[in-house]
Length: 265
Ligand SMILES: [Zn+2]
Ligand SMILES: [Zn+2]
Image (tube, rainbow, N blue to C red; front, side, top):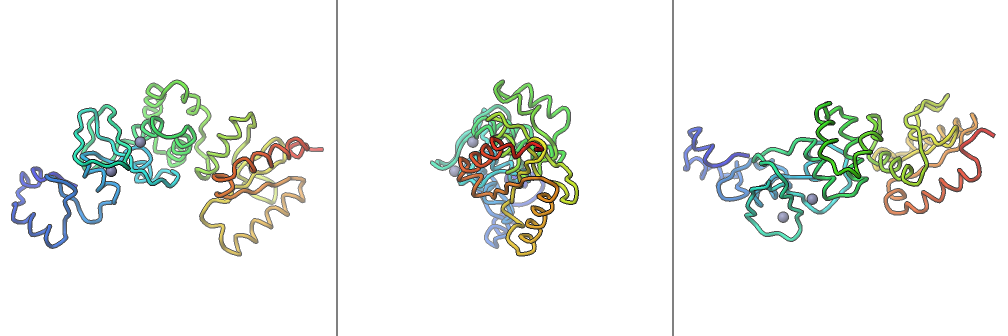
């Protein structure tokens, strides 16, 4: 993406721009700005508003784990000017100057999520960034000083080994009701398990992907049987249960704990 005046300064002529546009080689999100046709729809839409993607929209483009969402978040900057009206976007007028054609930095993206999305959305994106080693010590210090005080504890609670955003969400929700879990524990013959409560209650989370096939199903059943043989109890939840029927998930876990399934007999 580039401003027309930058392109002209580089020696491209107005005529060439016109030709390329007619040929579909470049597109124009707004007056004075050109983009390649491969630009993502979100970046294109944000540019039409006069901003760049923000919050969860930017997080996804950065490759962080975020839940699907229809809203496009746009960072306008403190001095920004809204160039197109739109009822569907969430406009962020927070400080700083968005740079055309780029994304806000990862710490800034996380701060934007903290401003407009839920605590767990922020937490899942944070753990996703930590897992991919995308935050430096300096970034973390900046987050700690700029995050609202009520969210700062999440920086200490966050780990860098969460397997998926779903796992982050489950750990966060369980912590909220006083259940602490251990993560990525190696169990004899079973291998690595997602979450362990107490000594022997395993919580396995089936992500959206890679749990469709018969082979995967067989592998899961084998794991459950092997861990049962060693005295473990397994509860297995999928995306839909966690996101749309959390009450059931929580009741199932609480009932198992009440029955002592998390402790060796
Ligand atoms: Zn919009
Ligand atoms: Zn927003």
